[in-house]
Image (cartoon, rainbow, N blue to C red; front, top):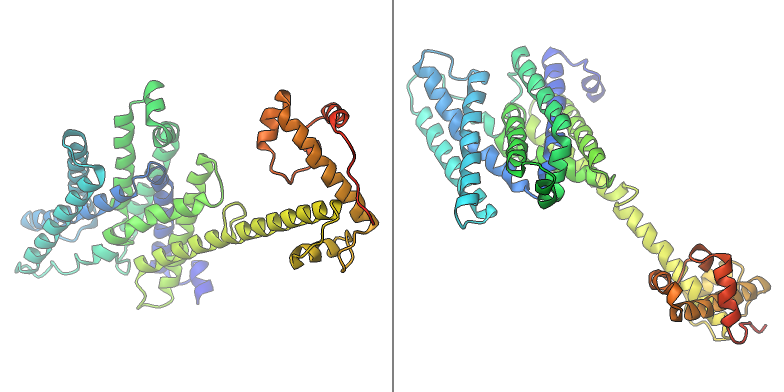
Length: 401
């Protein structure tokens, strides 16, 4: 059944939900990257919680005008208005008071969300009989998604991704170094507001799919996941979009296989699963890769120390060191160097003497300061430099059988 959902063969509504969730995830991942790089992850939390009073007010206004209170477009307009007010309030508090940004975020988040809960309570006491179901916007509800809803989400997501592409350079500059961006002629304040506006837009279009509580995860988890795979900002943006889109599509497909599974939480859990896989398996920053690098470094250190011990006729007491030497054919199990081991040990001893000379020479001072004790000297110095150092070495390094 899951395969049918992934191949869009599970019915019209399931296909709408999967495609809409995938497009939302793509937009959320790409937009949230700059928020993550700017170290403002909590801003998305404040924006999402600020949408709740707008939803309640939009419902009341639409009902008062004789319309359908749960019209998605109208609710999203109300959510956008209140979220924009919350964003401007947070921006004003940060710029014109002594409140730190985290305190301003906490104040806006709690006040707006509390006001929204009060409005929902008031709506539930109204006698019109059409107010039930607004609480679904807290965690998302896709069961009733129709074609117009999917189109709205798709168009909003496409616009958000397009704006990310257009504004990626100034947003990257502001995210990494606002001072340099300002000196280069970039209006940091306007770029910050544009960045927040993108997050606001993604938050609004994501209310139907994952809800205002969980949209924060879809904005932050994909960029964090993408960061494990690359160091380049542009790649982080598109990898984050890919991760978000994959999480949205697969999460919606999994949710479609069992009616009791809520779509929003499943999408977030899918994104978290991709994060865990990246944390473990990413080739550059993953836990497994780091453990393997540590193991290789440990082997190199033990092997180097073992060779130096052979060069100085010192007994080797460390079992791991001796086992490495035996495995490489550099020593016998009793710790006596083989012919190959004597040659390698003499080379290691001579290299140590070479570096001792290089550290005293002003011309090699900067190179010697970066030497890690393991990389062959030939990778740091030229043949002429090595021959010059060899002429200064008194005595010779050798290994007795």
